[in-house]
Structure formats: C-alpha cells, structure tokens
Length: 381
Image (cartoon, rainbow, N blue to C red; front, side, top):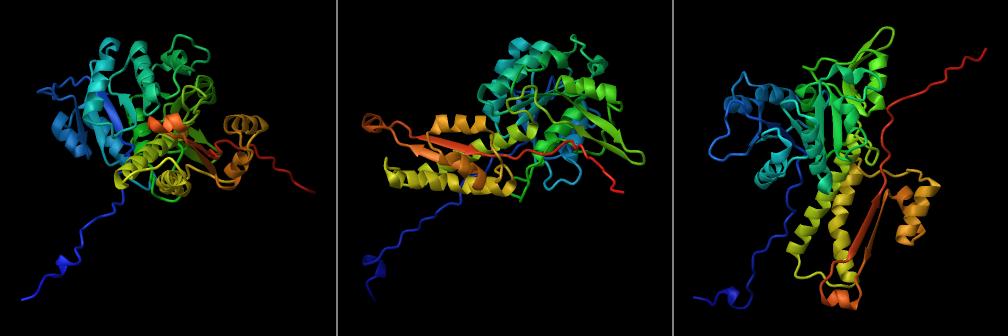
C-alpha cells in the first residue's frame, strides 16, 4: 500500500482549443412556399443537398430546380457548396423586415441571399437595405425583364436599383442565374492558397446565356447589371458570367464584399475565442500582444487565400487619407510590403477604469482582378 502520487502532484486536464468554426458563405433562398411545406411555425430550414430539398418541397418544385443548380456549384471549383438555407417570406415590403429577422434568429450561417419568385421594386429595396445595415450580407436581385437590355431604359428594375445599395447585386436572368451567383460564393475555398475568386468568367452547367450581342451587354454594363453571356472569337465560343459587379462602387465587385465579410467575421470569431481562452486581457503591451496574436492567424489565412495581397501600389490620395487617419507614415509602406497594417490604441485612464474597448485598426490591400485586356500587337519588319 502506498500514498498516491496525486497527494503531492496533481495534474489537471486542460485543452487549448484550436478555435471555433469559420463562417460558411452559404446561400439563402427566399420563397413564398406555394406548396405550403413550412408548417408549425417553421420559417427557415438548412439543406445539405438538392435531394433533401426535393424530398421536402417535391421534385417538381421550383425550390428543387434552384437547389439543383446551386449544389452543382461552378466549373473548376475547389470546394462544393455545403449547405443551402431556404426561408419563407411573403414577398411584400411591409412584412420583409420581420420575416428576415425571424430567419436570422434561426441561422445566420449564410452570406448571399436571393428570391425564388419575381420581386417588385419595394421588396428589392428592402433586401438591399437589410444587406447594407451591417454590410454582413449580400442581396442578389434578379430580373428577367427584356427591356433591361435596352440602353437608357429608365423604367426597368435594374436601372432603378443602380447606385442604390452597397451590398446589392442585380442580375439579368431568372432564379437559376441567381442560384449560380450564390453557388459561386458558397464554393470559395477560404482555406486554400489563392482560394478567393471573382464571379467574372465563371460558368456552370445547366445555365443558358441570356446575352449574346454587344449592344445588350453594353446596356447592362451601363447600369451595373450582371448577366450570363455568350462571347466568341472567330473560332471559339465562351459562355460565362459577367462582370460580377455590385450596384454601387463602394465595394464595386462581389469578390470584394465577400472577402470583407469573411475577414471581418473571422476576426470577430478569433477575438471571441481569445477572450474565452485567457484569464484576462490587460490594458498594456501584454494585452496588445494577445489581441495581435488573436488576429494574426486570421491575417495569415487571408494572406494565404488571397484576401490580402502584397505589392499593391497606392495612389497619393490613398496615402494622404491613410496618413490622416493613422498619423503613421509607415502604414502605406507596410501595406505594400506586407499587405496589411494593424494598430491598437489603448484608452486613457478613465476609459480603462470603465473597461472601454481599445481601438483596433486594420488596413489591408487587395489587388483585385484583371477582367479586360487591351493588347497592342506590333509586327517589326
């Protein structure tokens, strides 16, 4: 018989967690549920395959057609869409806010959202306003009105929505085209090297080009309206999505807003994990080091997947604005060499006593993507 060693040395079990799960950039489909499948107060349901959608809504339903296109993803994808959220709405502006709030109380693990049935302008504006509220979602409004392809036609929905909402994208086409837009976002491989991608020049089986002449393409470009088009050289045909724009120039393109949403959510999640894992985060250099470390893994992931790029040249206006905001002349150089700069400003003594938050400023550079070329071919004789 002996005294157990734990009498002298007791070893407690602990785990240093790898952190919580990242946001999935899934899609949300809003439907009026003409088949009355949402019963007993159900307002939203997550599906992981088109078959699941078919079993719930019926194989002949438009919801199933949408899901079939969505779960196909896009050609040459590095990741397949993993889930589709379907939510019920009445397709009226008066009820939209309450209905979308009810859906977000069920799940917010989605980014892009669209509608199954055609919407009027007031509903489209409600969608855009919701997306702009925190700039955490992307509204995708589609319209099949052929007048949209006529230059300077002020009566169309797409024309009326131009320059309206920062987190709104308009698509000329039907709900299958909108399914493609959501699928491209849901198939971004955030953990892969250069996994982020544009919507421009992406294609998918099952889609029919809606635009095949330069006049219609130009008319749509003028009002920042996207489309699935057919392009051609003298001996080859190309069918793909163009140009992948938002309705305003604040973010400009779908890849920019998706990148921003993913990065902001990842930083939020990392900091929440950080607070949970430590005893305290003091208002001194040690606390600043902790916060920097929490954000560091996210920044490294963003440099890997392509959200953060190095070697991006800033304009003099951009340099001046950054200098005015930070008071640090080295920020612009850091953006060029490292792709990002992060600063942490602690509150003064009275703020510290009230546990006010430090100000954490993150600037990052994104090199965008080439979508057009002008080539001068010169022969030397």
